[in-house]
Image (cartoon, rainbow, N blue to C red; front, side):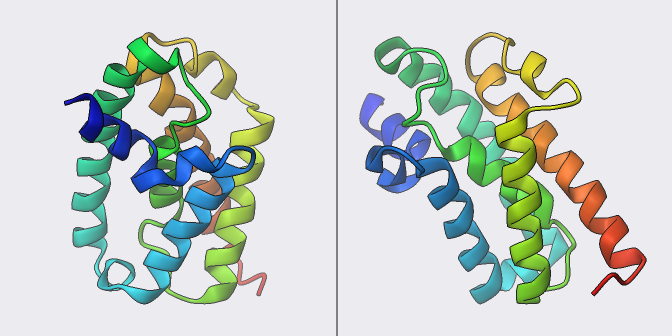
Length: 150
């Protein structure tokens, strides 16, 4: 079970690359978004998001015993946050890149209660801050799209 949990938590190994792994994991999902049917189907993207959230919490909980709380190797949370940010967004590079920048800003700066969310126990704390960062980025991106900034 630990091996499967490590693979999930590290998003297929991305978490092992070291510095910048969270950005790489988020960027990897952006590429998936652009080139798969997830971008064209909010229902499929929503179902995929729910699966990633559930297995992300569970795998982060399992690997915590060996890696410690919110290890930098755990990047499934960045994938989940990016999934939230892109949910229902038109599949266009300008929106995908903007989503990436917004999500990474909120994930790194951790304003508006995001830092507090990290303090939740176990896998919930690992995932919660990125869920909030994704939600904040999604709201801002929807405003940008709505007022047609570009």
